Image 1 (cartoon, chains in turn yellow, purple):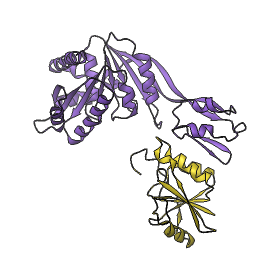
Image 2: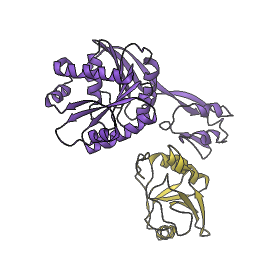
Image 3: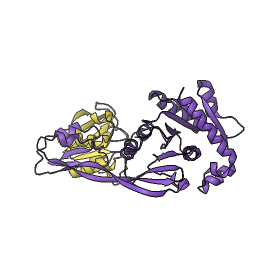
Image 4: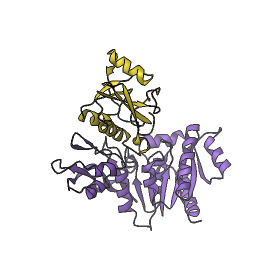
Length: 121
Length: 280
């Protein structure tokens, strides 16, 4: 099973980024092998629809679930369309989140926002 | 001559000033580009003459023809398309209706449908032709409506055209001031007002538009906007004091130049100054 997370930098000690669409990197964490793969988020530089492009990257890297602190409604429709399960991440490192997930402490993300469109996030 | 009235901050008096400028002319056109909440018509109460719908051409996918080559997904700079689970998704709210994806699709899997986003109404109010753009609630961008008003109505250069711009300094404002020969910036005497004055000042300089400032709702106290104008040598065309009487007329949808000879004089002088500045 592969877990995607928005992260601040492409290294194993990276912290979870505070939002999804314009996170600098994504980590794809393979739970079977405990290995990590980092992908640059090309959506950060786009004029609009960053969440959709970011979600497309998550889908294309065959993630089964996504841990994120928040997610916009357009991203969610892409992710749900690809049957990706979205959990609310906790602040901290990749390892913190994987540990929380394994101990069943992560909750499903139910609410979405209508997008920040360059104003926050 | 086309004069755009803009401000950055909302509520500085763009509409009141644009409406009164148009009203003192013998014959003028007033275009309300504040399509999210057009309110100039509340003053003019125009007799409706015609109305046209504005629609965008949004792509529609035939998933039986789509092979998932993703040419369209990669092409769209607004990320209005996504390809998942062998299915193309279209996010119509993000689509800027450029039509590029339809042209590019090698399988002819994309066609276009019309998505209405609002309308433009045209009416007459005594000496003023009133053109109002209306964006439907929930639609993301009014730029296509503004663009259509600009293209269809900015033809007669003989009569003065006053464009009531939306607040801010983003795409919709840029689209509104594009055809303007002169930009009139309305600034309020507050720190917030001054901040947004700087933003639109930068914008009009960037777009090489001649411009002048009207300081509105002035009190007899420190005025950050006035200071900014003086420090940067910006031409101040008028200083309009805060006036409860004027507020009352505005709140009742009355046009000040028709209520008071003083305001008639003030706005006539402003028109003269704008004409002198614009032809410098």
